[in-house]
Image (cartoon, rainbow, N blue to C red; front, side, top):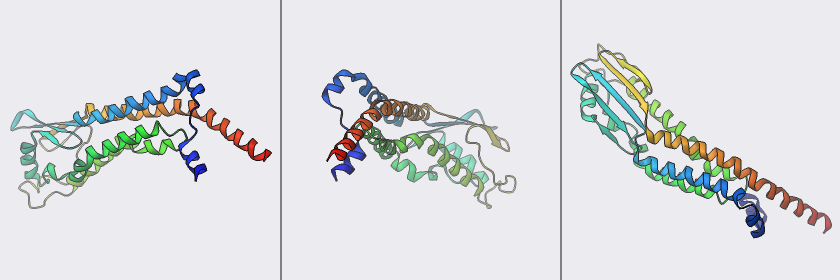
Length: 226
């Protein structure tokens, strides 16, 4: 059992080694720390913005998505979408928004745990944080696609608008409605978290792999002499 734990958690750093090469072992921890703080702070920043231009709204309508709620002209946009048979925006990603904060806190703790695992298995702890930005975009696209392709055929303008896939990023629109969508600060903070975590693992490997190899050679030598 102890051998399995040692393989999973990795070698502990001897005190004299830590004193001699303090920054070698501190560097990955610092990168992981900054990464997880950015991810946690991203909760308070928008992940996605959309502007909608319609003839009856010359100043445009705006929608901002955080990980756990929507803000902006949600009611007005829902009113326009009603005419083409699209479901209310609040019905999209309801489960994702409900669990998002707790999921980010869990990813925060997993990245923190990676700093204390001195083996290659530490990467497994960080996979959720590394893939989170991609998962967010994929989930957003799938919901937009679902809403756009499942229009109510009984809507007032159903005959004028065929099912479509709304544009997730950049310019798009349907009929007289024009949209422009872009990623927000919170999303880029999550991307920065993933990037810093990757850099952290570079220094993590540089710090702990020589120590792991040294301990393995010593263990092999002891086994051979026994």
